[in-house]
Structure formats: structure tokens, C-alpha cells
Image (tube, rainbow, N blue to C red; front, side, top):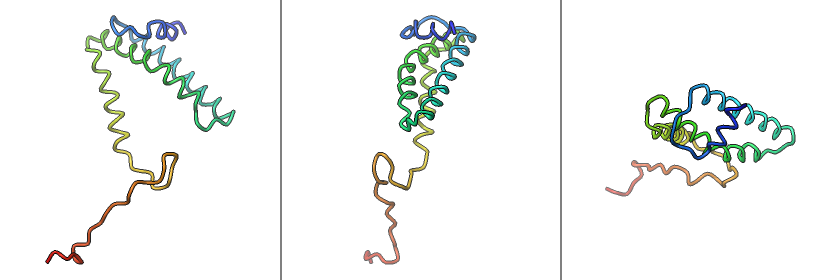
Length: 122
């Protein structure tokens, strides 16, 4: 648990190094707490998962700083951490649209199919 609290104590320290042990133990506890919050949200009927989102937002900078320090310890630039965000962004961008109406409204305009046989271009 020591490394988990250290991650938050050094929340904005993007310089220096963190060992594999520090990185993995801190992330283990972070994940366990997130799973517990998910279970609590399910038990109390919080379908918005606000506890999980709040904890994730609070932990975003400390976990990123820890990952940057881990990259430094491995001999790489901390900028390599951005590849994770790019990969996640590409995965979400490639996901298919939901066809039904969701929390953000109805599906945008349907695909336009042009029937070339019935066109008046000739």
C-alpha cells in the first residue's frame, strides 16, 4: 500500500524514476480500489458509475506521472506514455456506432445510398 500512497504523494513529479515494483504494486492497488468502487456502485444502484469516474479522474495525473517515471527507469522518454492514449483513442474511434438512441441522442443521419440506375445525369 506504501507505493500506492507514494504515487499520490508524487502526483505531479514527471521527473526521476520509479521501479517496476513501485509501478506494478501501485497499479495493482489502484485497480483493486477501482473494482471495489465498481462493486459498491452496483450494490447501491449507481448506474452512472460516478464513484468510478471520480476515482479515475483523480488518479489520472498520478498514474500518468508514475508511468512516465517508469519509462525513465527503463531508459525511455516519458513521451512514450502518450502511445497508450493514442492506441486507446484509435480503438474507440474504430468502434461501430450504436444504432439505437442513447444518452447523447439519436443516431446521426443514416448513410446515403445513391442509386446510379435511376439518376438523371444522362
